[in-house]
Image: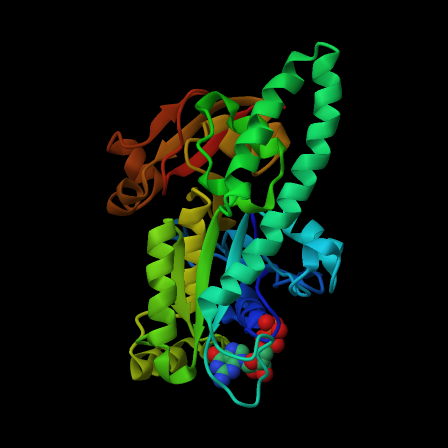
Length: 364
Ligand code: GDP
């Protein structure tokens, strides 16, 4: 599954956010309960109102949402790239993620120590990202020495990779993250293989005090401006409030949300922004046994999307009976859509669209 790393200085609210994410009713009500893969890794249900509707129409006995993984990555302090704090362990954890959520402390609380002594979310962000940039430079320089040797003995791929390494180093040496680099279209695969920490997509999570959950505050404004400048995603959230919301039943939650002036829980927003950030979309399967949402990347073809369910579906793919979500709903389900000519037979080249309801035909 797709994995988001929750990163930030100590005492900014990472664990509070992680616990809220993994304790939501949605996370727990799912058919197979929220599971802690490791103490700091949680699987979270992706909120998806369309799924319930599909289940009603198809008369599904079970409703299974798509899942997303969150990792609480503790232990970052200044000097982590030099092995301070949890150092290398911390960096290895980040390397495995698909995106980074920078949790930035935007709440004041005299009882909770801030490692730098004052609330300054942008300074915190710089501290954390600097460690990641230093770690990237370090790994690139080591790699470059090896690549040089290979290039000298005539390895053409090594030469091409050196060009990418230098592209990344040029950004980093100017104090900019590797994600700012202008990577040639035909080198994106090789670029990913460099496994840089600062080339991953990022989201800022401005963690505000309880009173500012609906409005944001002066600190979060600054964070939002910075995110806009960087072209990064940004979500204003009060982790404390979210951890309370997570424990409420639907009705109570709706009341509480209205009281604080929120349309939906911040966590839902966070997950949706995460989806956009990772270029993800949803397709559905729906039948009497279960209605289920599946996560794929935008642009995936039908066989590749089928492979998310089972490798055999991809290998033996013949075709996919496909109905757009709206057509499925307006025709009262599969047979209605078929009669109305809205159920399409799609082949290997078909690019799956968000909300497609699919049934795969395959050889075993
Ligand atoms: P971590 O070290 O980044 O994982 O931080 P924690 O999640 O453990 O939070 C550190 C402390 O800050 C805890 O006592 C939390 O209850 C508190 N905290 C987290 N979020 C908020 C918030 O939105 N408002 C307030 N007042 N306290 C918070």
